[in-house]
Length: 194
Figure 1 (cartoon, one colour):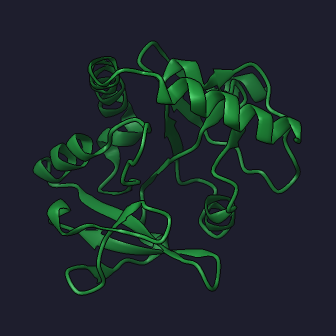
Figure 2 (cartoon, one colour):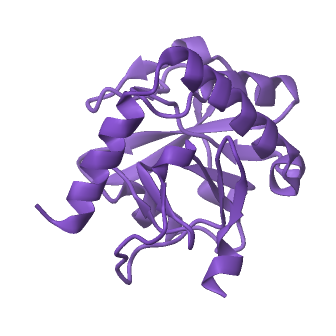
């Protein structure tokens, strides 16, 4: 097994062991830290991800963002073309499980959203390092998507502290995120990269 795969598996197992009460407590701290960032406050349209499994829960965050008048955008995985398509969501109850089990917007209840209009991307992942490199689920969807949008658009990940490691083996095509928000801190990865 490659070092990356081993790390992905090990951290995912640790994340799966978090009990529900702890997960919700941490999620609240993560939300408070995220919402206090200038990148979040200034963003009018935010590409979120719909959490599933043991990920940091995002549904309350999205509901609150909608309540603040922000546009909530969610990705739909185009499996054939291995890309993310964006949909503007106004009702989170209309999400349905995708091929991967991830809640996604249905095309009937949502409208297409242009990637160039996004002000902030919340990037999912399983493992993150202090320089903002990440290990996702292995499909490469987000790396491909991030390479198509303006590099000035902030990319922020949310994660439990247990998902943070000092260094991840990275490759040239891996695009780091600018910040990682955990229940304990906001890691400014740009500083770490120098």
